[in-house]
Length: 174
Image (cartoon, rainbow, N blue to C red; front, side, top):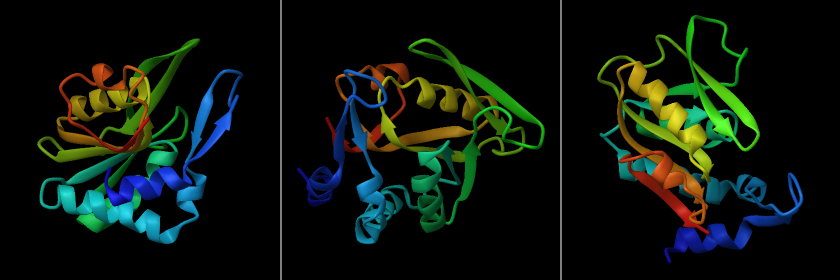
């Protein structure tokens, strides 16, 4: 286990029965309260993807928290993948399945230029539905997906399988 992984595991909080009974929620707010740890996450991914990424896509909303500083550290653009009704300009959409129903993410049609190398960032990958939908948005806009970076990966759920051959780069695995 790396030092960064050990430090993250020591502060990520388990919240039982949230958002519903039977779920053990991995709460990253203690990570956000630690400026050194947040910076170390940013620098970890900045070193790993230096010179390899033109744009970082963060999914609403915790992907914004981690994706924006990583984009800044890489000297790359930041692109938000947003919930419906949040983007003011012309956009494309992707639906994905939830446990009960569907959800959708939107991106502006000019958010990614053809050929741009893209890193997708979020706090957690579980079933992979949100990540896979974001990857489809990137591909539809002509972007080249380099990898997906997550603070937490729930390995007992099918996240990796849902994103196919895409590189999944996670710091902490449960």
